[in-house]
Image (cartoon, rainbow, N blue to C red):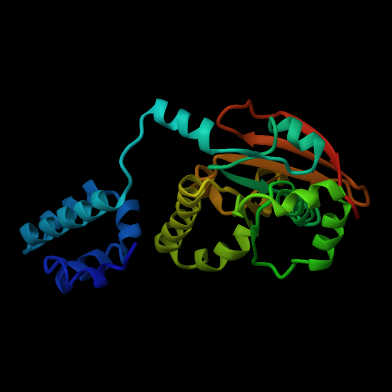
Length: 283
């Protein structure tokens, strides 16, 4: 969605006065507008000399948003879309696939949380190789931490059976999986010192990933590091505002020097939290 300033030529009501009013409440774009408390914004507008014109501007932006979003879907339509268009992608780790009833589901944003050296990138690389070969498609891999290894990908691909390669010439290629490793490295720099605007950008990025997952039948996998919490216990970075964004949250841990990882469910739309699985990675 566009900055408010770019809407002025088509919608004169969104003039400099309205833009300045919004900017005074850290609203610079349509995304910021959606994330703001609109009742509170309207109350502030009432206190201004140009209150009627400001309220007309608020109504205009809401109308623009209404025209941009897709029609609402009911539960039956969502279920039908899930059954017909959303596949489950195997990660290549048997224990993880059993835990998640098949693997990563298209249409969902899955967050993999874990401390440094817990195996998050290794998991992403092997999952990317498995999905690309066995699902006859491409994987979009965003490396924000300069940790991507083409050699490791080639190694994992080489371990997949030759019969899988022979099937890759059939059908059309598509992108069933998007990986962002890591989302915290991408977002954390804009959070420090930028207050509500930084949080709004973080939430906007999250909902954009969910929108891509739903509209393009993608499974989206992002990694997130941990920070110290109460009592010295590790907790996911990015705070409470981000907590509600992912459909699925998984916690990954590994004993130092071991190749056995433990994955547990922190949040899942159809499974109980606390379920765990062990699996093995290559060191």
